[in-house]
Image 1 (cartoon, rainbow, N blue to C red):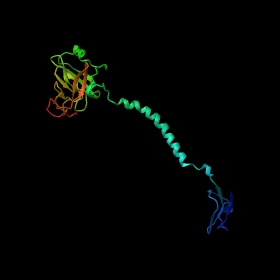
Image 2: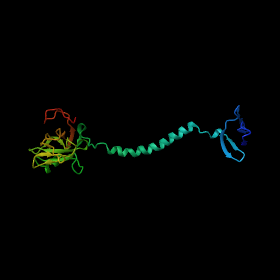
Image 3: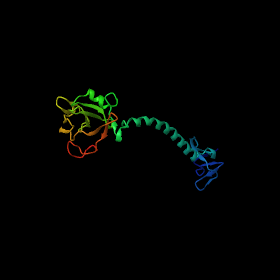
Image 4: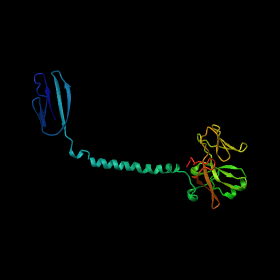
Length: 229
C-alpha cells in the first residue's frame, strides 16, 4: 500500500503504488487489483490514498459447486413437501366403493353399505331417503309402490345453485329451500329458477348391495340426452 499527496502545485500526480502508476497522460497496470480511494482533506490540500488488494484464486466461487449446492437444497425441500401433499391430494379424490361396472356402493347415513333386503325392511313404499352416491353426491334411493327398489337413484343437488333438495312427503315433491325450485317425485323440474331436472344414476343390486352406476342413456323423464353425462 502506498500514498501520495495532491496539492495545487502538482495536479498531474494523482496516486502511485508498487503495483502501478496513474496520471493523465499514461497509465500502467502491473497486477489486477481491487482498488479503494479514500479522500482526506488537509490544510495544504487534498490527500488521496489508494489501497489495493487482490483476491486469491482459491477463494473465487466455483459455479459448478454452487449449482450442486442449489440442487441439493432443492431436493431437501422437495422430498418432505411431496410427502406432506400426498394426504391432502387423497382427501380430494372422490370416495368409491368399487361396485360392478365401475359403479359405487351406496352408503347410508352412518357410512355403512346399503344392503337392499335390509333397506326394504325399514323403508316403505314411496320412501325417498338420502344415501351417498356417485362422487360422494347425496342421492335418493326410491322405494316403489310394490315395495321394490327403483332402478334409478335421484341426485339431490339442485341444478340452480347446488343446494341439497329435500323430499317433501306432504307435497310429494322435491322442494329446494334456497330459491324455491321444485321437482316432481322422479326429479323432473316443474318450477324454476332451476333450469334442469335432477341428475339420475342407475341403482343396481350386486351381491345384495345397492350399487350406483352412471346414467348415460336417454333421460326417460324428458326423452332427451342426459345433461350430466
